[in-house]
Length: 323
Image 1 (tube, rainbow, N blue to C red):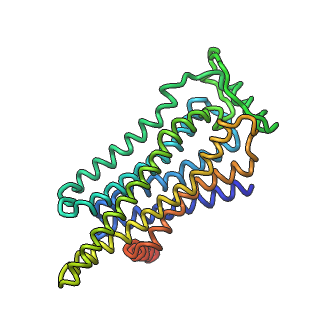
Image 2: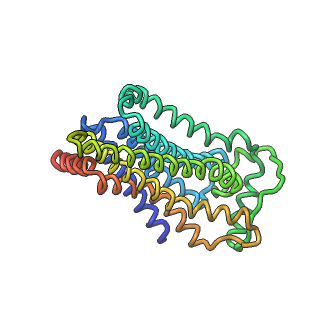
Image 3: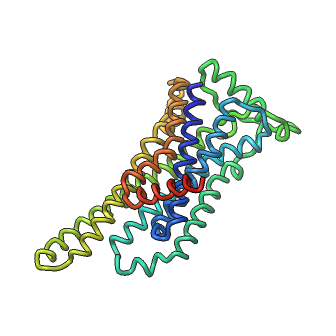
């Protein structure tokens, strides 16, 4: 019951908080800038975690019977939101690096139309990635797989997929919907984590390191110019961008802290078969922690960025005035 309560609370916070971000950006003309469009894309993915991914996870928790096609759709949809969120973080980091590295060319390169096209491409690319389970795997006897998973989870043993066949009618019959019965952990580890999540996090670390290094060099040069009587406005503008970059890098750090425990858990199961299954409470905790990432981001934007904080107050105030 504690797990269910935590999931419901996280889902509600993610939906409300990220909904406020999207409303704030859409309602305030001063918020409609390139970086904020990318933040809105990430907020949309996080909001969908609250309203869709969390309920899907609860459905799998209760092992509700459904067709294998529907069950696998629930699993890959959760992956879609994760991929979209981290690709949005990459796009934001690239945008900030471009601003600091080439400020004079930035506005001509990052037009509103280009950034909106990039967001569409980002979602399509994420959608393509999560289609991999459908494209590279053939459906097998999922009914016996799911039942085996349920039995072995109770016994605390390690379930491993084996060579299977697909009897007629298997794919149309209802099976208990269990995540690991339709989404192999080897796929989650080798493809989702080692090929997508981990390289993206390392690239984010490299981009933000480059951003702060370049910005530090600019500030040192501006300090010398300011001592000679100029460069004050550029310095204050760059300092503002640096504060925003710190806020965004904090979002990246929170993403890593929230998602790495679940992926480490999966790696232990795949790479250390003799270790046995992790304790159920540890698995539930890592799942809740991964979903809580979507609920934490709005608070980071609100408390770290003055512009977001001010717009949040106006948006919430206008909601209460109209009601």
